[in-house]
Structure formats: structure tokens, C-alpha cells
Length: 189
Length: 173
Image (tube, each protein chain N blue to C red):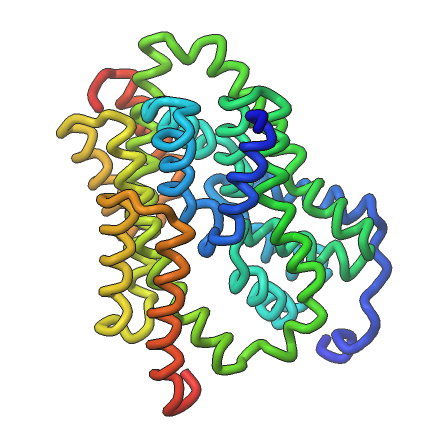
């Protein structure tokens, strides 16, 4: 198995990139990253598990939608510039068409009391899912006594004071990043 | 500036601070489109988030729906492109060099430093979505129940969304 990882990547057609990423895009609710991993590593074998982790590293390090960034990376690898355009296009085309259909329904019937009530319920569920996601991510933060205060400060600045995000993030990354830089001096985390 | 150009400029700028993806960006999207530009009211914002949750696809789709609400089909495509294009270009150019700076001390420091900030943003987004949906005490109790169920069990999130829709229709949240 592992020998073939060192060979040149197999040929993947642009159509295969487009349809592969379409499949990924349509397969998950509330984020498709686990499906992307399954498809790219297990089903299509376009990436090995290590390659997936490594390339995802940059996509998660940079801001922006991670899965879109990942589509650009995989598309570029197998199809150059055309692949880098078609893979994210495939990822987004189907889901965008679906949400636009839902938007049409919302425009037509969104004002009905039943629709309002249902959407309020779904928004409540969405809020709960976000709290759960934030809680899980908080558990995964390293060196909590140092870094969870930054979580609290960002919450206050953004949710309560409503400060603009670019300012908060610039200040936050500078302070929190400097602290991390200092903590990392002693060894590799 | 025309609305479309404004939308593109606003969202392209935001894409540069979207650490943690579109989900972490929710509170800032709210601030820009509801408070600052007044393109929609808080309730509509919560509804759009709800619709995006109930549809398959990447989290960035909430941006597509916001664009739609602001300027129809052209707005939807403009908003989506503005959110995806800048970092796509950066990642296209940087991926060849990633191995060289991956693991460098500054790179690990930024990554370590950004994580707790993204957590704060998602807590803020959760709060703002609940607030703008106009929930009463029963609604917040349901939010708490969903959060607990989701952290403690492996129920698929769609069940929570279906439960929310049903409770909403029944007038309970």
C-alpha cells in the first residue's frame, strides 16, 4: 500500500473532480469535512490519510471556508488551474442550487405564521448545535488556563460590545499568538 | 457604491478574518448585514441561518442565503464568490510552500493562538442566533437540551433540527 503513495498521482479527469466534489458537497448537513475525508481518502484514494491531514493543515490554518480551500488544493493537484476552479465549483453548485430553491420557498411562504414558527424552532436547534460545537472546541483548546480567557474576551467583545471582527481578530491574534509563541519556546507542543 | 459592490467588498474583507470558517463568522455577518448595513432584520437573519442548517452542504451556504436576501440571485452569487475567492487564490499560491513553513514556531503559535478566539466567536454566534430568533424561556430550554444531547450522545444533528421544526410548528418554542 504505502509504496504507491510515492508514485506520481494517478490521472484524474476534470469531470471526475467536478462530480467527486459535487458528491462531497451534497453528502453532509452542517458541514461536510468528515465526508470529504471519507471520499478523498477511502473512496477515491486521491489523497492518503497523511496527505489529507497535511493539506487540510494549510486549509485550516488560513481563514475562509476550509472545505472550499481543500477543494482548491486537490483540484490544483490533479487538474492545475482548471481543476482548482472546477473542484470548488462542483462542491458548491449543488448545495447552492438547493439553498436557492429553499430561498424561493422562503420568499413565497416565509411570512406565514407556520413557517415563522418552524424556522424559529430550527434556529433554536441551530443555536444549540453551535453551543455544543463551541463547547467541544473549548475542551480541545490546549493550555486552557492561558487561552480560555481569550475565548471569554472574544465573546464579550463580539457578542456583547459588538466590536468589528477585523479589529478583534487582529488584536486577538497578536496577543494570543504572542503568548503561544512564548509558551512554545520551551519545546515542541 | 452599488449594493452588489458593497456586498462583495464587505464579504471579501470578512473572508480574511474567517478563522474557523463561515461558522465562526456568524456574529460578524450579523453585525455587518443587520446592524451596520441594515440589509435585513434580526429575525430574517435567524431564519436564513435556520434554512442553511436544514440544507446539505458546506457551512458557507449561510453566506449565499444572506446574499440572496440582499440582492437576489446576483447577490447570492456575489456573496458566495466574495467569501470563497480571496482565500482560494491564497491557498492555490501557498500550498506548494506549505511544507516549508508548516511546523515553524510562528506557524504553530498562530494556530495555537487562533483556536481559543474561534471558540469565542462560535459561542457568540450561538448566542446571537438564539437571541435574534426571538426565543422565550421554552426556546432557550430547548437550545440547552439540544446542546446537551449533542455533546453527550451521537445523535445525528438532523434529528435535533427535525425536533426543532416540530416543536416550532406545535408552538412550543
